[in-house]
Image 1 (spheres, one colour):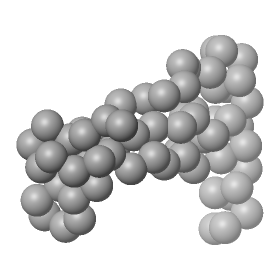
Image 2 (cartoon, rainbow, N blue to C red):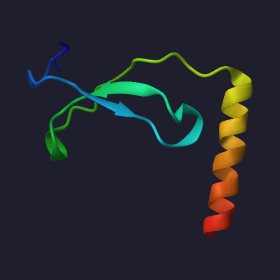
Image 3 (spheres, rainbow, N blue to C red):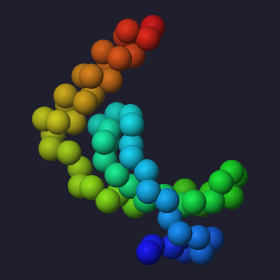
Image 4 (cartoon, helix red, strand yellow):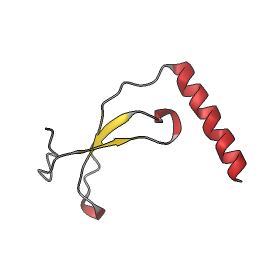
Length: 67
């Protein structure tokens, strides 16, 4: 188990849902509110560049439809 150095709490696992990191998993500080230290450690490597470009295009299409 991995712990946050500042708070001593187990880090939580999340999945990114925005931009070129969509779908990548990461660990982050479990502390809620203003005292969150902002620690983030990526579990998955960066997507290949073509995948990042495709994700950016999809997000832009999504934003265009929302507007």
